[in-house]
Length: 111
Picture 1 (cartoon, rainbow, N blue to C red):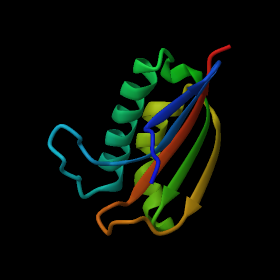
Picture 2 (tube, rainbow, N blue to C red):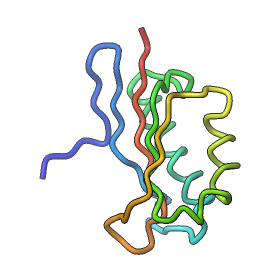
Picture 3 (cartoon, rainbow, N blue to C red):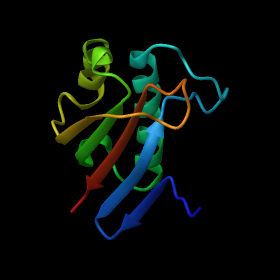
């Protein structure tokens, strides 16, 4: 399988779906809010390394395993993207490992 965490094409940065692992410890927190915060920490690191800023995020897609998790998730989403207000889609679907509760994919534009 071909895979890149992120691809930069001109003024665009496409970040692959990020799950909630703490990549320093390779541990997954239990709560969807903690997983989302880990996702955004990874996204911020990748975006910065690519020469972009979090404020450049123009689009986000959230994949959540259950609609029942959304209320617990909203504060973490607001902390990271509330001031940015990107176009957003939330999908309810299964993920590839049972401990994964959320996956977040972003597209950033810095023109």
